[in-house]
Amino acid sequence: MPRKLPQITNDSSAFWQGGESGLLMIHRCNTCRRFFHPPAPICPSCGSLDVGPEATSGRGTIATYTINQQAWTPELTAPYVVAIVELDDQPGLRLLSNVVGLPPEQVRIGMQVQVAFEQHEDIWLPLFKKAE
Image 1 (cartoon, rainbow, N blue to C red):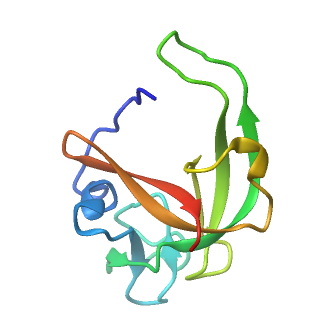
Image 2: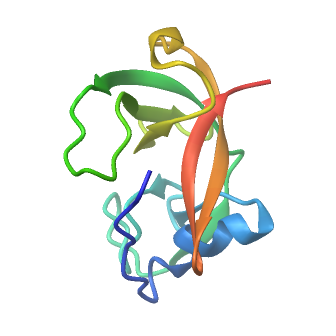
């Protein structure tokens, strides 16, 4: 599936390029220890500027999902799953991503998943597959 690639910034580079090392990097505050996403230079919980990327487990649970049946451009292959994944590392820490590696009709809320990176140029997109 063709993908529109994000623009890498100082704050987001670890998130988009951590997959090169197999790591899902999420910003974390060194003051209150809360993870947060999307990456930013300030903690949204406590306002600290002492933040930076930290490796997570890359594992989570599907909180909700939808199966997209519409091929919005001729290059897209439908159907595909768009899901909100809650990471195991912290309650409420969620990412919007795609679930890959199994038929869309097998995806379920509550399913355990793990990150699977897809490289495009110098970007490793964090997608999710059923946990082993």
